[in-house]
Length: 375
Image 1 (cartoon, rainbow, N blue to C red):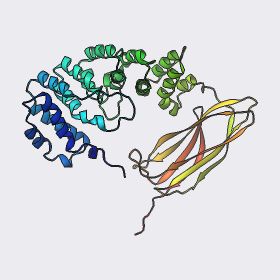
Image 2 (image 1 turned 45 degrees about the horizontal axis):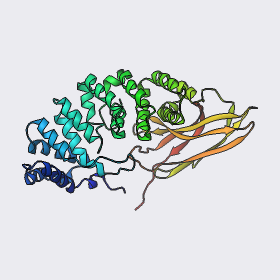
Image 3 (image 1 turned 180 degrees about the horizontal axis):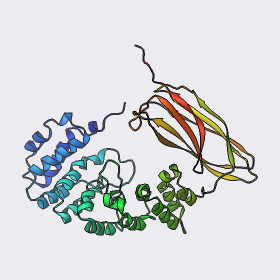
Image 4 (image 1 turned 120 degrees about the vertical axis):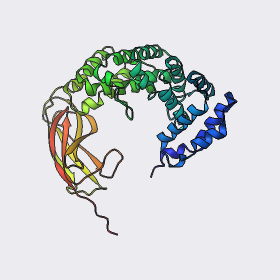
């Protein structure tokens, strides 16, 4: 079993933060700060630990927020020198972003300065969101300037912090309703030299497409003009959810908009009655019935049974294939039926379908049976 994240955020973290602050603010009462933070600390998960440290910082730094924020900024360690494989080390600054988000809303300029510094050491994608809600025009003006910043971490904050549906964060309802201010920022970042930033741009577009599918297609069609291969990869990543949903406009952008003249044969689902905790293997053949070579996007989806007995579809990406005239290609995949943090498995009939350029074909079904453990 994976080690819980909070184990990487033990008592050594507030001790280290206290040492950093006391080095620049001699009046900091380290002992009182640590006594407050560590009271009940062991029982808390990662996020509550960060919030508990932020609360204690507010009580033990000067009452004047601007002065407190300046001390926090002065205490920060070196900036990140890369954009990949960062691990848990940057989480040292989790309490700092909570501090800014929870206590800095009435102090716009110094809070934006703090987030500018923090995102170059950790991230400020969560703390920037309350400022986008309260001060949308002022915050967007800052973010537009930051699209030209030399730091990829700052540029990524522009695209990641404005995601309307950022995971584990409150949604930006105003941008869900009207995403064009966000699209104006993404336009400036679509050819960013850093993959780290471009993938964030793609994720933001993917979010926008869930609420505005036509606007997503309109945007990426325009971006396809004279697109570099890097931008094309961005577009493919941005369209991934729309492709899974089988949306014709998105499929058309990637060249899969036409109906294909192929057949599905020899479909197999084994076992027909798998048990929870096991797996099921799905196989089939795709046959080109035509006299011309055909390019086909092949995905399949399983309608998983939920706790209430209803079903919810899950699309599994398979591959893009090219079939010569009359050619037959076998395809398949094994699906795990073990418990996951993102999906639980319930007994019942699970329908299985294959999607060819978005067109749905029924493959069959399997009956998931609850495993009984005999002791």
